[in-house]
Length: 291
Image (cartoon, rainbow, N blue to C red; front, side, top):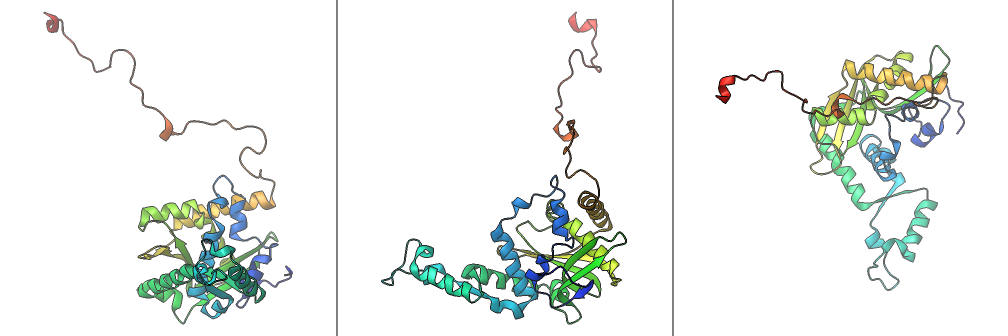
């Protein structure tokens, strides 16, 4: 797809077309510019694909016709109709895959299909999360494009845009609670994404003041948590975002130590506490102790 797209909000842009517009900086591209903090390899393609499925089930149910759920053990039978030890190597399974791909379908496992729908049901059962993601006054999967005062092009795809807030749906394997989810936000640089989305919204003069995550667990009982990004998190994310832009668009080094050499200093948490040599300062004695 051409990068010739007008700045502003786009409500019907397919997800694949959005990602194909690579001349506009996205939060993911910015994260990749911070290899000291962001490990893209920690996210498997299977996990990313499942996250996309959940987003479709929750936010774009009208697009579910692009998927076909399949149970390889049922479809991938031997020629005589008996179960195969390796269903995905059977002629029946390969024919099914070829026909599905020819029809432009995305194949997902039956287990993932059912799990994604159970996660949606968990969100529906959570009053606050359901209000944010399913209310009539919001818009889902809105693509935004803008240019800043330096002529740099930015883009964002809001999972959900509601009055005064951007909502971000996250599937997670993390434990619930503030401590665990805070570590998740820091580990995946979700705060950088939050600041990026808010800055894009500001450049487009959108009335947005808050960034909120809706976390939903990927395993039973599919716990749901609604969490607002604090001012400190947004400021941290903006600092990281500026650092990434300086590397991509300025003259900053692509990573720490790209030129010259680093001096590695021992952090406080790694220091060893060794007993002091000689007589302790608080040692007291009397000659009478030896009388």
